[in-house]
Image (cartoon, rainbow, N blue to C red; front, side, top):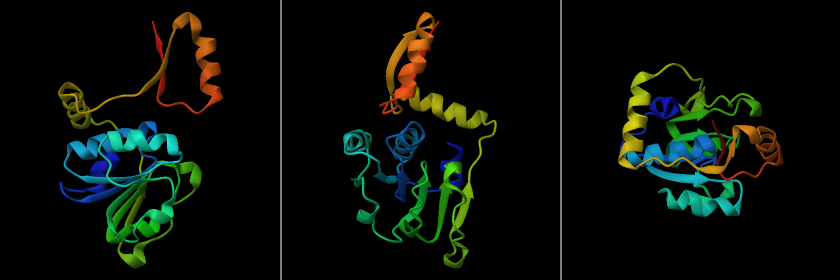
Length: 170
């Protein structure tokens, strides 16, 4: 939510979400669409294409070479794709993928960049609540375990390739 606010893409604007089928990227895709933003998606596996299309993405690709250069008002990079050529001159590029290193300096093109951090945000939580209540935001749960199955839940997490979150019920 906070990164989308910083990107400042208005209804009708164009946003690329890199990692649009992941936990953060999937929510960013849904929130941006609920705000009227046109969203394209870069995903890492063919199996994720249907998810991104199903949640309102226009173009969905696994290959960054399919993206038009300098055609997006903003790029939200959730996994370190560093698709910096996709953002339009004068646009904004945000990354939350600190493991990928710093975002390259794009100031020569007038592009503002950030590696976003999270802060307390009551207004953002209020907006999320409204989106959930309206049915505009869907959380993906891969599997659910009881508290007595916590070891199995952890083992499943370590296997990777999850299509959603692992939840533990009390």
